[in-house]
Amino acid sequence: MIVNISKVLQESNLIDEFIKNEVDSISPERLATKPNPETWSIIEVIQHLNLVSDLYYPRFESAIKKLNTQAFEGEIADNQKVSWIAGQLANMMKPKGNKRKLKMDTFDFFKPERAQLDVEKILNTYKDNRAKLNHYIKMSRKPIARRVVVTSAIKLLKFTLPGAIYWLLSHEQRHIIQIQEIQFFVQKKEVV
Image 1 (cartoon, rainbow, N blue to C red):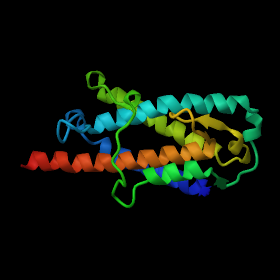
Image 2: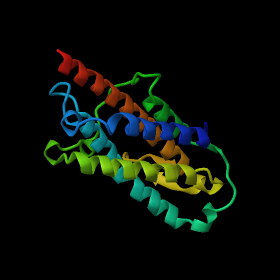
Image 3: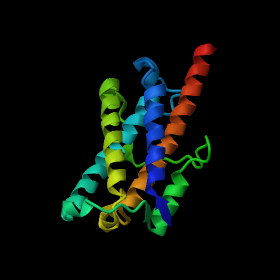
Image 4: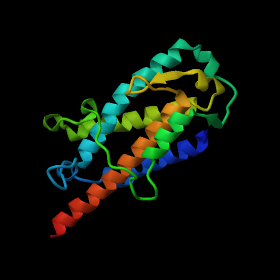
C-alpha cells in the first residue's frame, strides 16, 4: 500500500486546527464531563492519546538513532510504501466521514486514570505530542524511513516509520470523531 505523506501531514494539521479552534475554548469542567458513566470524557480521550504517544514516540526515537541521522537529510519521497498489515490496521481505525467504523476497547495500559486528570497539563502534553508527530511525519518522507522499524503495542507486529505514523494518525482521527461525539452529548445534556 502506498501512503502519500504530504496528505498525511495535511490530515494531521486538520487535527491541530480542530484542537485550537474547538477544544481550547472548552472549559476544564466541560472537558472532564462524561456523557454517561461508562464512557470517557474529552480529557480522558486526550489522555489516552498521550499514553499511546508515550509508548510509540520513544520507540520512534530509538529506532531512528540506530540509523545514521544524516541519512534523513536530502531527498524526499512523498509516496511511501507501508506494509499490508499496517495499511489494513490503519484503514480499520480511520473514520469514514464523521463516523467511527468500529467501537473497540483499548488495552488497560492505554486507559486514562480518572484520579490523575490535570486538564491543563494533559492538554499541554497533547499539544507537544502533536508537534512531535508532525516532526515524525516530515521525517517519514525520507526514503530511509522505510528502514526504521518500530514494534507496536502488540509486540508481534512491527511497522516501518511511515506505517506506524499512518496507523497513529488514523487512530487519532478516530478519537477526534469521538471527541466531537462527546461534545455533542455534553452540549445536549446542558440544554436539557
